[in-house]
Image 1 (tube, rainbow, N blue to C red):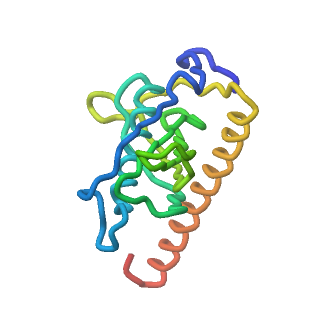
Image 2: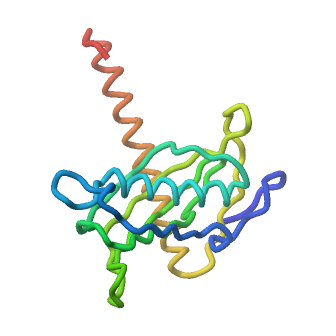
Length: 178
């Protein structure tokens, strides 16, 4: 990624990468006795928010959550690790990729992936107005692949939004309520 004069200097992905770990308790369960998806989503948002704030050097707010996938149930007593990193940056927004892993707190078996998500955060100033973020600098081949995949997801997000807005305008022109 090339830097433009006046933009903040780029930051490597490793500068803001983070892991949040939490032991799941009975307070985290749903009616089925497994950990509630909303509890996992909050941990995902918390970890992604930490990465967004670190990368942007200040406040950042969740703009959207894409592709939250629950791959396996999480149980009481699982030690959950939420690993997050900045995959891509625009002028004021960042895509944060998150992997959720779980392992039994009292066993030495390896952690398994139980979920993943992509979130978009917008950096904001004290008045809540968008502010410029530093470009993210991929460091490894895997980082570069994630950066390229994030660009594809962004293109799809924008195309989906444009298609929905066009449909709403068309329906409004036909006399249907928005």
